[in-house]
Length: 545
Image (tube, rainbow, N blue to C red; front, side, top):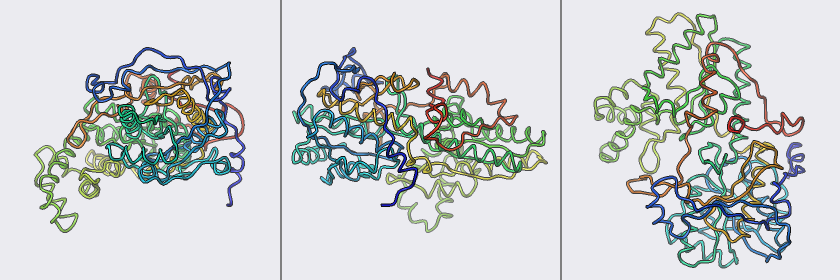
């Protein structure tokens, strides 16, 4: 296999370990107080009687060597890719080897489907070598199948029994770790001797709380996007003739947009949670953008950069209501809707049947967006908001607004979506170290006979030698939400907090950034060189410590 010079160099990078892990995965466990849940405590306790209330765990270095038996562990990658997934597996493997060299790690292929079908590969040192410190999830692949019913749980247990597996590690986001908790609870209730440990993954950054400071992949992805944004800013400031509207990944939260704004200082950055809090209408958002465009044009600056979170439209109250009405309408009149032969007819069908306010909003939208709202639907018939080209929606409506106000300046635009570019790249030094420690911590939790826990690494704004490791009971993060008409336990998504230090810093500076040119050019992710360049942490972590 031919590999790049960078990959050759990265294979030799040795991640550092937190102090508690430096004698291996046999650690001293310190138990905290019993925990509750993020919300709906009575219901969560009823659903998770065996794992609810478990204490937060801290780990300290074990000075007395304890003999350990060899164990077999299974691992899956679940959900979308995030930089560092391979290093979680590397840390898990090395941690298990530190317990006993006869321990085995089995990777189930294609995510949860591999667990259900028993499709696996044994991960050995030789197998693992080409994947250390690399991006992607190609080592064993990933998938989005949910693990939530008893038939699946029994199939997984059967395959584990055949391989003598006594613990599973699920590397994923909020839904995947919710599934890990359900699996752990089921096995605990039924006396099935399989531990289940979760690992926090998502570039969106919405899987975090006081114990999980950041999910892995967020640091790298934001550095990649900020590097691209900086490139565009340099071009903008050179050509001085375009407005660039850039949509960034992050459907449920605006963490990526806020982080990239703090790293690059754009003229405009919309934070969805603020839009929802202030109940801003689409018209108000358009008015605010148009005002900034006009003010800059008066200063002879017909250029700029605007950052837009992927899920913005779901946070605009009127838009959210319209989407809900559309989902109900298409579900209730599915046959008549599907009988329409083309998109134009389907668009007209929707336009005539929405309630007055939603109808008015829908008809005001560009035809392209009307069609996307009708055409792009998930398997449940709901609008796929992540596929709506919000940046083009804003461009067209701002342009219309400017013309209606007699704007005489220039408003030439370019649109972009940055998403997949950041999901599978080589992890930054921070993420390479963080994910390796998460994997190693998972092996320590397994060694300590824990189940229903998520691996946690804290004090991340400090050097690795000051990091603290432990475990967080997953039910502690849960509340109840209605999903597809029924109540489900889920890990509560962490949205951008409007009183947080990062957001307050953004608000303090955004007017200055809007009217001036304070662009920062971060450049590409750096792996070798000065510490302040290669090991810099995210603005989010800087602000919070």
